[in-house]
Length: 284
Image (cartoon, rainbow, N blue to C red; front, side, top):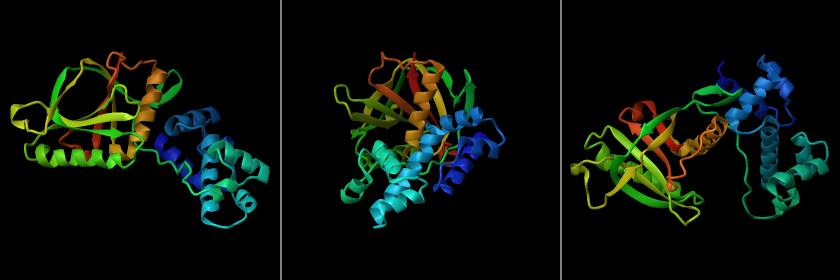
């Protein structure tokens, strides 16, 4: 059983025991490894400590039941392993910033933590820690041409716009002209906190130029290159948490001279079969 299989199995075990606090000792013994090793693996793959994850999952399911039923709050607290109303209310308010009673009365969505599913990717040991594997590559400048739209990272419906942009470019250009490589680039809009531009395109060739196309230059830099096998729209939160932690642990810094260039995804013609793609992060 590899790391990903083990943690997915542990998460399933936790889900089946949300009525109590599953202990680190219990899970380490279940997989015949040391407490320290299991703790490191779980934290690395989920970006949460074991105790935080279990507590947040129990609170999430309790909150759902509070919203969906008229069952007594104290009984719901007992259902999820809390020994007193006070302990439950204290944990609930610390996580959700509102009390269980306010959760039932107020008509708004709370930020829940759903069951984790660990996606397949390679890991490596670095300075006694576990991080997602990556390589460093020098790249650029690369001249691209394609289409671009602006989006707001806080507006979930904007994700649909990004998907539609890429799908249309694939249909209009990539498949008809048998393009071998597709690149998606995210840049920040300088001076606007939450607005970004999203570009999808290919290496510049005269026959690709259309009236609605724009040019973009991928800047010269060293890049940390991460490989995944999934749909970026589905796993983007995991990807950027992996990147944040890997750069932090490895001591690498973002290339601050490229203030607006955030990331580039690179796809080849085999993506539709393999789902594999690389994401490039400029570093120094």
